[in-house]
Image (cartoon, one colour):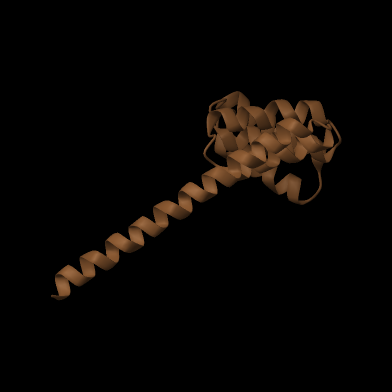
Length: 129
């Protein structure tokens, strides 16, 4: 399959396929090409970090996973992936800090869902009366 040189999403997709087939050399190349095309997409950095982790290049993985968190810090999966690499690198305080951020974010999300439920219930009661 011939890819357009600047089609970041196509490179990323190829990287995912290669990663799932455990073809890490290809996955690293394809994720890298996706980042070259669009360095602002956090999923590309995240997946390159995961591929680097899979081949044991933990410091490089940390760099890309950190970049993914910087680009989209609210996404828990990116923070979890970074925390996992930090644990491997025995950077336990940083890993715990990342886990703490995840817990706090989860608590805020739970609170927002509870507030929406109460609002929905109140709106239902008002409409029904």
